[in-house]
Length: 388
Image (cartoon, rainbow, N blue to C red):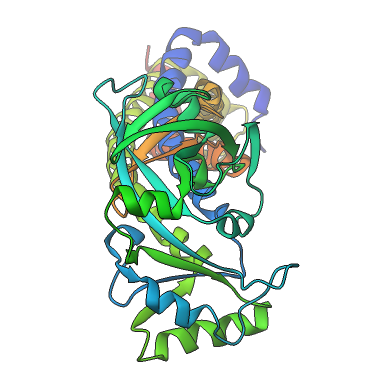
């Protein structure tokens, strides 16, 4: 015969002070874990949203990022006419030569400045980035010292607001537009004319990378292989999506540290739940004896106390989800180990992350409630009735 669940609810309510404190401890542990997961998920979402499935990023062979790649313009002139590269409606090859540099701009949180990615490119490179649109101002004009900034930069760096002038390279540049790349990483970049950037940074003969678009998904793999195997070009090519997905390793150290902190806190929360349940068993010895006299089996009592611990932990898990929900959509930044510049992204708390948090809380409750429940189930009837 099973003990009614209402019995467990009543006991949690009667011991409301200890129940609340234990649930709060579990909730704080879950909140720490969810904050880390939301940060990693936000970065991953931002990077996965960047790029087109047909785009291929071409770097100098042996380079693992655009920042350390030196790409000769003469090589670009050879590769842009490779078979399998798509053409736009004007009949132009969809291939963009691009230069990456790092500039320093003051931000709201770092008055001394943060590293920001400056991307020099031609208009065709902009057209190859699907989903990017101008939300204020206009696109830069080729041949002019003008820049367009991502929306995260415009909001976090007052010096880069629309209509301002920012100084880098050999002089001042006009901020003529603000772009929105949705959840993409381009929100953390500044776009400018390729030749002007090359002139300012003395890189007229070399660039950083080339972005090309395959004519279709079937041609994609053949084009990547053809570029990698061409000894004349001496380049390394990979799908753009794959390149950005690899950058999620930036969040790995933070994820490891966060998991370690959550694990340490989980041990403490499990002991708190265990202490609460042990105290409950000690105070309710006569109840346990009475339940045995009424015909409830040891298995029923074990399950009842175990369920009570689970219920307490699940409440803590839900509380942890509520505590971390205000972070959803909050913008933060992280230094990329690939570009050594800041990538801004939004905390993203998905239903899956919240379920993981509640599951983590249930695990802590199960760990903390198993031994007290076992002790309660093994109490002898007469011994339990004699205990005060």
